[in-house]
Image (spheres, rainbow, N blue to C red):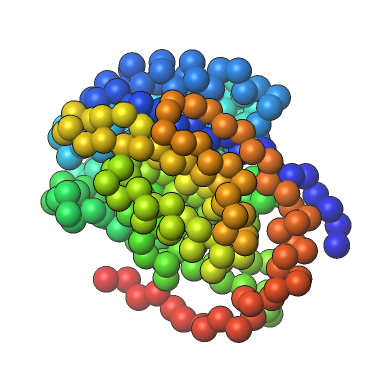
Length: 270
């Protein structure tokens, strides 16, 4: 098998400012400013310009707004892709939209499929219905958002033995505002998604207390295909860069080809 470049991934675990897009762009911009030449992919938390708030819908930007422009600027400065979710307005709808932006200015997006009804997210935001896979520096990457982590069918990595160009993805990303009270499920489900999908998983959660007095413990992590933590970030503000090893991933899939015994299925939109 031809070896290819490993992927350097930077997890940005921050204390997002409440309803302060400009402040958050400055805050996260300062945190990642040193990463040029040190990373290939920068991952910011869910709703990194506002915190997880139903009221942030009132000031939602569109794709021509300052946050998408800022992400393009940061990707170009760092010569790295950057991703994270924000509230984005499209016509009459507002989505919790995960953007994946590359240094050349290309923007791809995924709209959060599973809205958090427990917090009434579904009453104000629109749900997406299509999963996204992007290709970046030889890796296939599937970006998802927070509550999606609890739904393994949607996140399923399909290995079509008839297809010659490989699986759906090699890296699965979850960005989140995942409360500290549910920290154990967060850590457990990240491991489960990695093991069952024979892929790396990167989970980025925020820290601090938000405007709804909800506490966040962080626990951002990179998990390998065996469910072992490659990087665990603890509970403070930090930026952690980890190298994902391409050859080790492929060797594991060859040694333990469980993907060939999986069930074929189709997702039905509802």
